[in-house]
Image 1 (cartoon, rainbow, N blue to C red):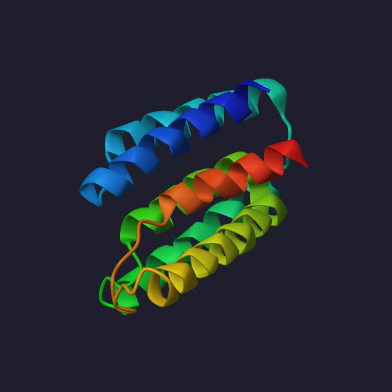
Image 2 (cartoon, rainbow, N blue to C red):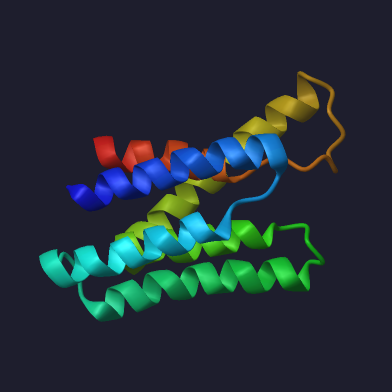
Length: 138
């Protein structure tokens, strides 16, 4: 339960940062990761292999960010590493799929209804926050 609040607070804070500044504070992410490891040592909610798999999915997105020349934010990859630490591989993949779906819907609305340019960048962490809320209520 404590892990849910920590991750929800971290995602909420980073969502605001991503919207306002298009970047995140890595020290907060690092602190949240340390808290996640401490919670894991206390509660043992998942296996270390699941945690590593979850972190690996974030590393994959981070790598795509580097290879795409920044079209995918590297901060998004860092946050997905963090969520993988808390959620494990399976739930982190579900989080990613839900958040990608939300982002795609928003991008469609922005282009079709609001007449934004399709090359405009949108902050992704708010969609991770919304997707995590969906996961918590399921």
